[in-house]
Image (cartoon, rainbow over all chains, first blue to last red):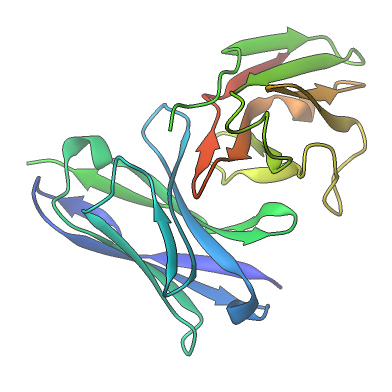
Length: 116
Length: 109
């Protein structure tokens, strides 16, 4: 079964850091681009970041300079390093596979709460 | 990176058809065919229903259809069923970014 399983998340103080992980299985990881998408409580989906390879990464303006997306193809894993966190970064974060069929596989989501 | 514009809510009775619009600009929907639609039930991860404006992923009912005209994309659901009640989001590629619509809550009366 093709799936993405997320870990990380939790409660962090403003200005703090957190790292999210997303482990892939059931498909050839290296052949796909991946994204992070977040959803603030009661709000809509917001695209956060994209990675194809180490030289092709994109970020939403709202996180540029604070978040870093990366992947470890040997571990079939995707990461999101989040620094200088703000209250407005509070959200459920999803990883999503980017294929010719849209964002076709999603992780289960992980909650990040930024609060003192 | 302004969000695409969707109506906040739509409703319909079982068996009816509804259409959800998604308005962007000439830089996103108007320029690219990388438009997709996602269904999200409460507490669940989104699910792709339409990709590349009008194509169905495997396993998605053909009651869902997509189209595009100019800067506006549309999702039509025919033969409404109770399980279609959910939030729906459009998404478009825009020059090294992706942008989502604000979401539309579909209520099946």
